[in-house]
Image: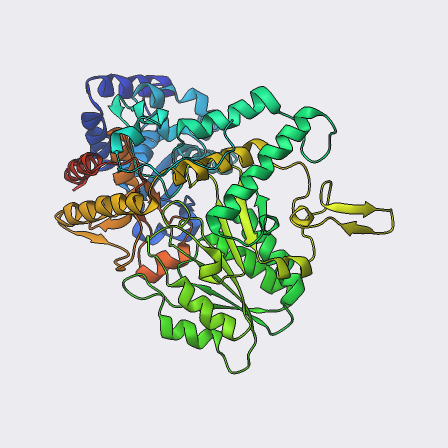
Amino acid sequence: MTQVGTIDQAQDEVIDEFLFFKDWQDRYEHLIELGKDLPLIAPERKTDDNLIRGCQSRVWLFAELKDGSIHFSADSDSMITKGIVSLLVRILDMRRPAEVIKISLADLYSIERIGLREHLFTTRSNGLVAMLDQMKRYAVAYSTQA
Amino acid sequence: MSTSTSSAVKAAFDIEEIRAQFPILKELVHGKPLVYFDNAATSQKPRRVIKAESTYYATINANVHRGVHTLSTKATEAQEASRETIRTHLNAKHAHEVIFTSGTTASINLAANSLGQLLLKKGDEVVISGMEHHSNIVPWQLACERHGAVLKVIPISESGEWDFPSANQLISSSANRVRILAISHVSNTLGTINPVKELVAEAKKRGIVTVVDGAQAVPHLKVDVQDLGCDFYAFSGHKAYGPTGIGVLYGREELLEKMPPWQGGGEMIDQVTLEKSTWAKLPFKFEAGTPNIAGIIGLGEAIRWMNDYDLVAMAAHERTLREHATKELLAIEGLRIIGTAKEKVGVVSFVIDGVHHYDLGTLLDQQGIAVRTGHHCTQPLMERFGVSGTTRASFACFNTNAEVDAMVAATKKAVKMLR
């Protein structure tokens, strides 16, 4: 089973959704809400091995291959971080490893467009960059099996 | 550029007059007026400091202590005038006891490396406290590792203070193996002002060399190294209204003379042959390479700027901010302040039940408020209090009660969004 529509289509949908909100408060409230839809990582997988190291909040990410597509699950102790992972999962979940491997930070134009630019910086401890890297590492690992 | 000692101290503490000197306070963040409460990470700079640096580059830029030409002489004079300003400010005996470094971290590394080589042998002990910044932990761990010495740690009480009897016990171990005591004057995370003078006095009785990390003290307190009685005192320019990349290690002459140089290079030598070199006099023995001349000049100006004000009045203003913030924040349900010592500078570190500090920091930023969140480079201290991090508001002389109110209101809004 793969996601219907391209990565860019998924991003455009996210942008449309966020553009509806006019101020920061509504945007962040929506992001926090999105976090609640995140496919949660199984409790027994919340281990140090699946922890993306950052110094401010903790993010656990896991991926498995089902019918040739990658399925992500994650969690975080920060609600905003959880919202951000949830966005990434929404865009990249249920795709072929080959598709995920190709994605670079620059391809994720939706993040900047929805006003979350500050989360893009590599120096930021909860860098989306680290999450994306981890997702791509899974994709590389599964690419031989897909 | 002004290198003269300051004119008379300004009589009244006029907050508007002070704020007008910080150009950055006019900036908007996310369309809102900036409320800058991250002064313990780095303070903002008054126009005079910014100007001192740019005037140096625009009018007298040249390398120091080398050229025979006019600019080099002027640059050297300006640099050495800063050293004298700092000597006076710290009440050091000699200007050559003031060594310029790139910051507190470099100052402590210099002390740990050079003193370590001079003093530490296998089985010796170095004592630090459980509230140290990583930069007053790691250099000592490295020094201990190199010399086979042991690091001992003063425990921290529930209020965020040294357990003084334990501290005393640690430095008076019967084997008499403690060589160095390295402690912070003020905690960066909690704001606690430590009884440094008292513990240094105990250490001195036993011939222990004392190193004080004063990074968080110099911006807020009048520091007198002779009164404290310490052998070394380190601080950074950028937390004390000065430029980044410049700091000081004050060291007592007698010890500095005995200590081996740490870094080698130009400026720090007397004679160099390919077989052996001899060292320059103090302070140059410890200042290898071309120094951060602009930074030194900017730091001198920052200290002069501070001394144009009544430092006691400045501290009293920051205390008012801290007390106001503490009272207002505590009205938020589930909020707990970490660090409740009686003697504190303008630092309020807190945690809120069910609210992650990262989320709070992000939502405060959206409202134009800059605070620090996380472990503040004091992971052992976070562990002591059983938290992964805190939100820290740290005040400077230019902050106001109205800004504190804005932060409290913004915090309430954020908490509502997150719960």
